[in-house]
Image 1 (cartoon, one colour):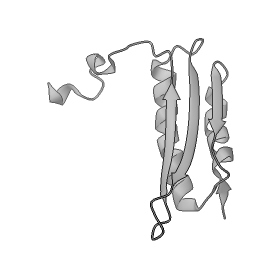
Image 2 (cartoon, helix red, strand yellow):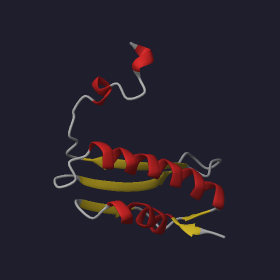
Image 3 (cartoon, helix red, strand yellow):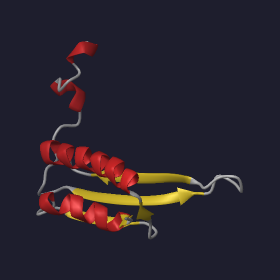
Length: 103
């Protein structure tokens, strides 16, 4: 079974995107089950960070993707970009969430 990347992203963000602007852009792309699982998990983490740290009334998210041509012997490199504005705290590391061992 193959899943459209645009549909996966829309499905993942829908419960959490009641406020703020969301733009999704990239070429049509079908994903196999392994890619859906891995990209879905990454999107979930990004969404949870947005819920925890973003100013939901002023934030916007842009999700874009592309496949970059790496030459005739390669299938290309997949690149997904999540750009977000209006975080509440500029220095997330100062909050000590899970990084206390580094200090």
